Image 1 (cartoon, rainbow, N blue to C red):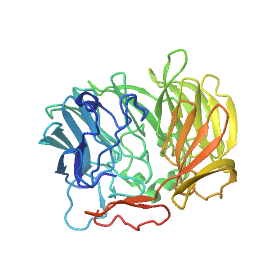
Image 2: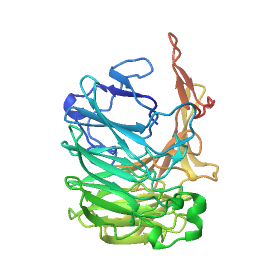
Image 3: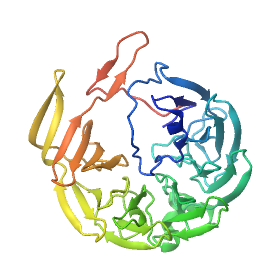
Image 4: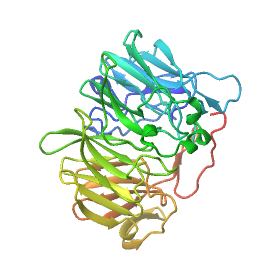
Amino acid sequence: MRFLIAFLVLLQMGVSQCDDWRQAAGPNGNFIVEGKAPVSFSVARDEEVRWRVPLPNTGQGSVVVSNGRVFVASHAPTNGDSETGSLIIGQCFDAASGQELWRRELSGTRVTDLSSLFSDNTAASPVTDGERVCFINVGGSMRCFDFDGKELWSKEWVPFGRHHSRQHEPILHDGKVIVVRVKPSNLDPKVTTKGGAKPLGRDRAYWTWLHAYDLKTGELVWTGQSGTGIHATSLPAKLTNGTAAILTGRGGGHQPPEEPYGISLLKASDGKAIWDLPVKGYASHQNCVSNSRLAAMFVGKSHLTIDLASREILKTVSLLNGVQTCRQVDGLYVTEANQHLKASKKPITYQTNLLIGDYHYFRSFSGFRIGRVNVKTGKVEYLEVPVQVVRPKGGKDEILWQKVIPNDMRNA
């Protein structure tokens, strides 16, 4: 989450790389980028930070950078303590100096809690094609501007239910911005609440779907043939024959109406379904990851790999039994094979997972661990990581392995 200050960190990379981060998921749209990772910077110590500026309020989306401009969104300013709001602010900064060039308001058709544990109206990051930038208010609006701040087009709708598509980042693909929303634009605002939505049931009229808009004109190019769940993070995919696709999913907590629960592969050109795979118990609040050959997913206590061409389930392995762990004991790492981890009521992971080469990496919520699954062999490994690094002013770093420092969201 991003609080009150926007930072541009040098991160040991050239300006040309910074200039081409046009969506939250990076240049390839899948949170993966080639090159060397930054190893020496610190916001806490003001090391390798070029500039910083105050923002109007809190926000949960990412910063995007293009052609010397930085774009970011936050909530509108509030007076005193505030728990809810709907209006968000989109801002444009000069990437070299941090000077604010312009800001624009995006109203929401529903009010939500600010800085919510389950995300809020600022959860969707901006996207830009180098000439235009599109800001999205998850509470029901989208506005596109040129780099001088002139509005080019806008859309508005009423979301369905209290929890609705608040994890889904906009996708930039082939001149289109792809978002998740309901099809109608004129639902009664009362359906944005839990009480107002429940009596309407699970009718397809209230499902959320991928919608692709032409970034230049705002014209609706296509709507996904299969529904996308409110928790899902759809990601681009590419088949071995070169077909550009999008992997999306349905399912999870709060009984989302889109069915059947499972995953779907859609054509990125027109949104038509290549295949649908029903998966009982699938919770879609995880990145929908794939390479040109297979997709990988977490279902309960198991890990599944799926053939991307045929939708056949290739392998199912336990994430808890017979795994290898590497944990810290008295300052040293100890590796132990054939371990059995305790099950948790919560899913073993949420959004954070990436398929890189033969390994599917994920953040484990069963202890403080990073996990990975070898998609060829099925081997499951866990690496224990510090809970937190405390950096006292003028003192040495303190690495915490088990102790959690309490925090809350009040007056963030």
